[in-house]
Length: 495
Image 1 (cartoon, rainbow, N blue to C red):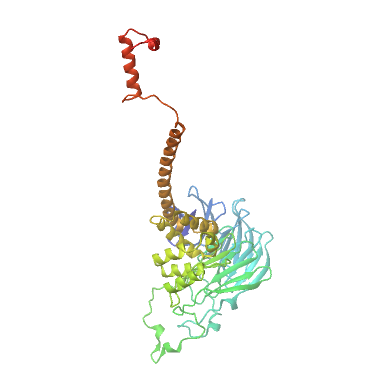
Image 2: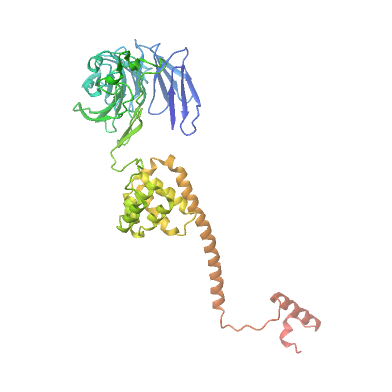
């Protein structure tokens, strides 16, 4: 797995995610500022759009050689996206056009889609049969790339609902009418990943990043707003709107200004302002191939919305209801799931051991399947440490087996973070395996010897002098030779 990153230092850097090192840098023949980047579905072609020269640069991923420089746009390039099924590159620009470039036919422009406003983002549907474009007038338009025909549009101005900034002289409703055209986007082919758009103007009220769902029936849109919207493409209606931040310390989060900041000397927001501070919030909006969840990077952190019912995160908030007495009371009531969860919230080792070992072995499977995913990782950590000191080996092995069988598929998605826990668990189990295997081998050989001895019971054996059988045979041979007898005359010898 690799990652392509770009900036305004005239270079695109390509680095593998596993090694976290830059192994190739793509440069332009003349200094320019890149504003967006895209990689085709095969990973062989890298493209980047320029903000100042209005050109598109094409490189080979394998050799790093510049293959082509595409010109034709009359404004900064704001978005690029490769078709997942055909050799077509879509480029969006502030010149109110989207151009389709044919990679097979010497990068010739096949179609030019004329828009009603500046384009801010572009993306293909996963099957490549539809193209979505976000424009500065808060609209999302859908196009048939094969026939260059618009198939629909969505008006999203009222869904963004930006608030009033502290420095605004007018209300948020009138401020939304102001337009600005400073944005850049980053995308990856296939319509499954759209990352990082960053408008430069605080008055921008439009969608700056788009992403189709896995089935292509819905499109996710985000921009300079605290809302991320999901629209139904065919019906062109809003299906769901997510509020990704409630942080009132950020600007433009409220519709009306806070009157407490208005003093006789003016607005307190005008005092001690850092001129070097960047305005705007980057909202990357990656998609997922399975369509089970989606993620947004916000000022509040990485937010993940999932269709799975189980909890992905528990803050471990301790209150008066979580006490050792309540844990033991739950154990007496045979409410083992609640007892285990409360014990892990308290995180006391003796209490954890008491809660887990109180669960009957035939109910471990039911308790394991009902644990939230976050607690599964903590239970595995406790089991790994218990293998080092506990004598209940089979009991903890049953816990480990049932947990992995019940949550193995979900744990695979976080294999990287769980690797230390799994290694710790494997190390403890392997140590017991080595010790027990040595003991079993020793016992097996002792049992075989005992069985061999028991089979020879009752068999009369002549008494032998002290010493080994070889010494006795050697002395007999010497005696025979003294009397002149051969080896076959031993039975006729009289003493």
